[in-house]
Image 1 (cartoon, rainbow, N blue to C red):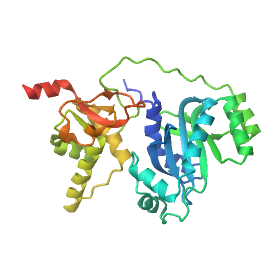
Image 2: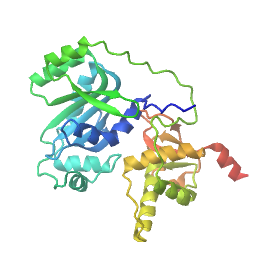
Image 3: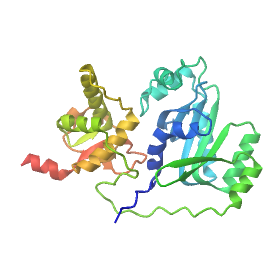
Image 4: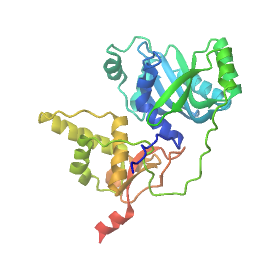
Length: 322
């Protein structure tokens, strides 16, 4: 009996975010656009966090809001709020914002690598609002059309999940588009089912563990001597390992933070010894030398716990202590 291929499923909004952080450039290229993701969960002053921030070759900034299910009317106020904050930043402000953000993007280098051209003299002179959701509420669609009439640049995309991939479908471009969208009988969006707390969740989409990351894990996991390890520490260890091996002439691919994060999520799940968690920001998370016991952790990202980390299961810590 042959097993069914595993279907790509997004249970939480963060899973959709994980996927699009890496795949967005490819998906929008199929629609004739070329974007580079430069920020994720970008913290704004008293305005929440922008799901994804992107840039095109001309320096236009894309403010991207993701909705796992339907984009309700409240998304309009949310994304306009983000735009009001972002548009006040000059070129240097955007450079600092993404350099200090979770992806630690060197904007000049990243733009040169992705687009093959230097950073434009003008950055963030204009912004594009982008909403990506499984479906669009009719009132949301009408609000989007009104924003377009008022001169706002706004792109709306529905995502459709196939067995092992995602397709983005443009929508809400004009009145005819909206009427056609809502004339269709849309399949009901499954409600989020309650999940009992668990020590670890299986990866939502299958990630094949690369041989180089497996080698890194097996050779460097002994450096993870504390009960909890931040993603930043693990990635720094990986970069040291990569530089050491490349200096010996070994042809290894360099992993971006997003790629490395997905690989690590898969490998810690496979190991059974560690699990992916989120911890609250604080002084004791900046250095592992002071960590003797795990701080407060969550298995899902929330407003107070958003630093990615890896927690060693207590049973392994207790066995070593004996």
